[in-house]
Structures are given as structure tokens and as C-alpha cells.
Amino acid sequence: MNIGWDIESLILVTGIIGSTIGCILILRYNWKQYGLLLLTSAITGELLCYFFVTCGFYSFPYRLFPNISPMPFFLVLTMFPCLVLLGVCYSPISWKYKIPFYWIIVHLGMLFEVLSQTYTKVIKYGKYWDTWDSYTWWWLFLLIFELIGGILVSKEYRRPISEAIFRYGNLGWFILHFILIFTILLSGLYLGLKL
Image 1 (cartoon, rainbow, N blue to C red):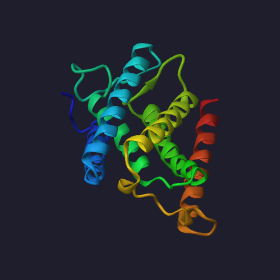
Image 2 (cartoon, rainbow, N blue to C red):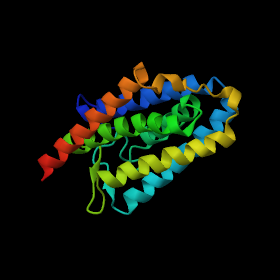
Image 3 (cartoon, rainbow, N blue to C red):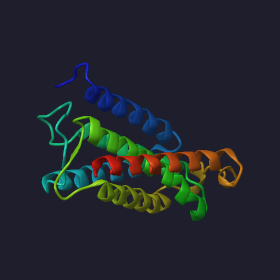
Image 4 (cartoon, one colour):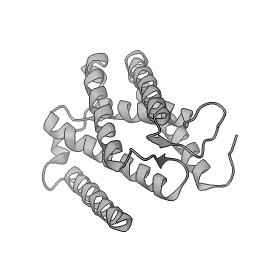
């Protein structure tokens, strides 16, 4: 076990604890339906991540438990299911508002991933992988599980955010645009520095 006073340990432990708490808070709405969604997304996330690592698309040089798995097993086991549960539970009903909702999740997730890839040993991209590949897979994973969640979780156990929040001039509209503009500007800066 590598836990020490470094940024990698802090990121991984904080991620595991935070996402576990998030999962527990959503499971209380209906532990059977959300539990099945959690289990399905956790297994899928682990298998996809293992496949990508095995193919050499990316690696995880620093792991809390390096002997268990070639990837941060417990972070993947909790983080992606937590994001799936959050999305299914709180995404607005209409797809024209679901997309901006997931846009926020994907952009914040990618911001975390790119910062981790650039400044830590949590994740390192391989020869045939870049931020665009990750961005695409984040979208695919979350939107596919939004559809699966629509089948597994009854409407009465979902807590969709009001669509009015995302309308022009409301708080959600400002938060959405701040996150999108901020992350797009940062991605432009990141690309400029890499060139």
C-alpha cells in the first residue's frame, strides 16, 4: 500500500471516499434499483478500464494497492458508478436539458483527468490515446447508462432537476456557461502549451 503524504494518495483517497458517500446518498432512494444500476456500471467501468489499460491506451503509474490491479480498482469501482447514479437520479426529464446537465459532469470529469494526467502520476496516456478519446468515452459511458438507468430506475425514485434552472438568466444557466467557458479556455491553453 502506497499511502503517503503525496498528491496522488490525496486524490485517490478523496475520490474513493467522496464517491462512496455520493453512492450511499443516492442508494437510499431505492437501494434495489439504484443498487442494480451501481453494480452494472461498476462492472462495466472496471472491464472497460481494464481493457484500455491492457491495450496500452493509458496506465496508472501510482495506485494505492498496486498488487490488486493494474488500475485504481477502488476509485473506478466507486467514481464512475457515483457519476452514473448522480446523472440518472438528478438529470432533467427533457433531453434538451439532459445534455447540458451531462455536459457539466463530462467537462468537470475531463478537467480532473487532464490535470491528473499532466501534473500527477494518477493516470498517463499511452501512444494511441489522448484527451479527445477520453472525452468521447466519458460521453458514451454516461449517456448509455442514462438510457439503462431509465429502464432500471422507476420515475418515482428519480429526482430530476427543474428544467427552469437551465433557462436563460437563471442560476443553472450561469453555472453551465461558466463551467463550459472555463473548461474550454483551459483546454485551449493546454493545447497551446503542448504545441
